[in-house]
Length: 104
Image (cartoon, rainbow, N blue to C red; front, side, top):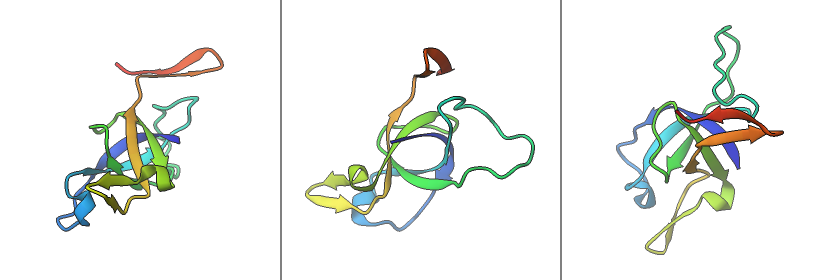
């Protein structure tokens, strides 16, 4: 699993049947030591990727993402073709006893 921040929405008017009921979001991986860090120096950002939203996340939120077979959605016995899925919205992160993120 990985921490990521929601950067935007992805709209696809035609999707595989298992994906039709789900929102697609654009995510950026973030470090646990500082999930809300914003690169304002114009440097390269982490590679953005698309994930299916199973938790109801919104833009700007820090989320928990799972990949591979753990990201499969089973809807009426048919697996949706997913590689990444948002499975939780993060309330807080603690690293070595220090809170690095607290949702406001």
